Length: 400
Image 1: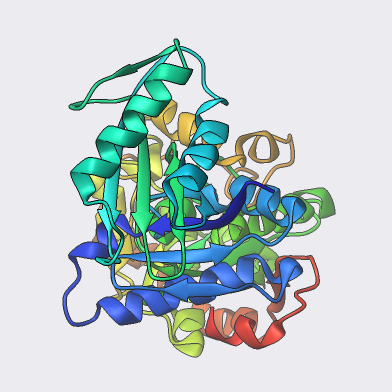
Image 2: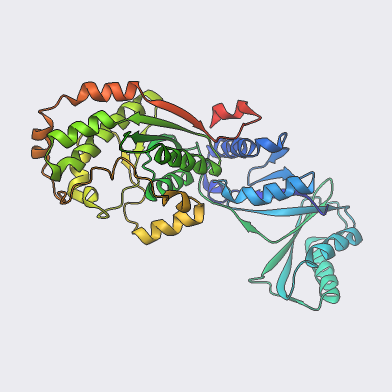
């Protein structure tokens, strides 16, 4: 096997100050958790980068395939090793560059071991000249090479790498608190989960289930979406709220044109109670400004009035096509469009208010005692943990 380890670059984490070590520790544990099926994983951390030993071709392939989904990784490269001898370094560099066609390159050298007999510039000239004489398809571009060939002379060996694989960027999941996601089963909310997790927010999800109006298939779709969202480096708990009784009362007692506003208000009240129990700091939704009647600025203001908890809306300024593009990129789109209705669509009024007046919404809600029903729904919820796969090193689950 040519490559010995993978070098991970932190990207945004490199800008952190005194708390940098905490972010790096979180990233390390997220990687361990995501690759628990490959345990034990040998990880070495430094201030500006991290190294994972690959050990076998199979493990190397799994790491390269799945690392781009882990938030907190800006980029990574496969690293080969050689004895600290120019002939050995040239042989490894030859094998690496033989994988490429017509490209531009340059040699970059870091000489940590100052006892190595050649200095940085001598190594660059010697290795660059050797490669140019052996590969007619190579040409030098010192400013913007297609493939930078990096050589590091360390105490134990020489390490050679070429090519950079882009990571997901962002912050390690769990480094920026926890929030509760309102997961509907549509296209938008899984994308909202993705964007919040990219900013380091750990997610738990809440879903409102209204049998017999919504089917078991719709619930299984939501479970599948929750499972898909765990691919970015953390487990997720899904709280399933029995919502039929509340939704039926809203249909019977609230005027049709403001029923959606009241429905969303009751959902937000329930989400806020669950948020308190799980010690989350905010509530996340997939709302996009003006996309539907309940997402106008006036509607959002009336809905928000039921809580003082921060409601985070990462998709607020996105249009639908942009959201769909992200959903396809992260692999949730095909599941989201399965034709199973959720509780937000079953009683959709023909002419909903786009500018509901808060005082009128509160007036019609005052004829029904919702608080007791909200408490009952929170108390009778079901909770499921994802991913569905069995985690071998479950000790890391408690950290995520």
